[in-house]
Length: 237
Image 1 (cartoon, rainbow, N blue to C red):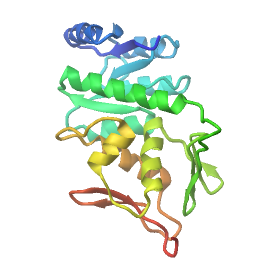
Image 2: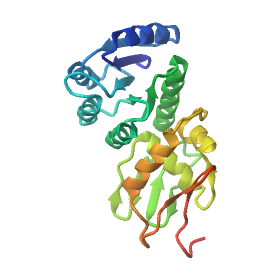
Image 3: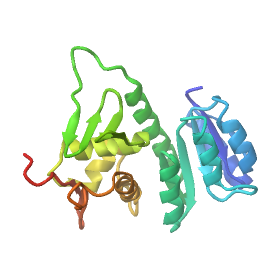
């Protein structure tokens, strides 16, 4: 099942192209063309990853994702129209693992798929006793890499696998500016490409889920032209 991919898109020509290209890359791909079919197959546990278009007949890709996430944690890569940032943000909030704007190069799609697979593999590796993984605490947040959990005070914050990886990098290096290129490499497992706003959208989603710090200040600050920094609370070391 590790190389089985479900493509949900009503563009039959695109689906045929992707099936041929992904087959050459070692993936076994099945394609369906409606939201109903995508939702039904997406929760059956037959696929390692789902490529899901937002614009679908019946109900759209966001509704398909909502139904899948109610029953399954299978990785989902959303295909969105270029410029439709609202769809990307909503998709991430619903639990999408990544997104790719149309039109796209099939090589970029494969790179995104493999990056998601690497993150999934890393997240599933058991922690070895000889190399204990320590939790990271900054202000009211505590991130446990072993359990893959984030606590904000007494509340557990629900994050996608990608959001967790991104927050882990920001908290581990709190107080230091991290470039978008470095974040993309460390958290997404791939190089940052031209006009790629994946990191920005994921940071935006993290900000909404975490809210402001206890003193009312922002947690994650943008450094124009460079990247992001997770601000340490005043008085902390």
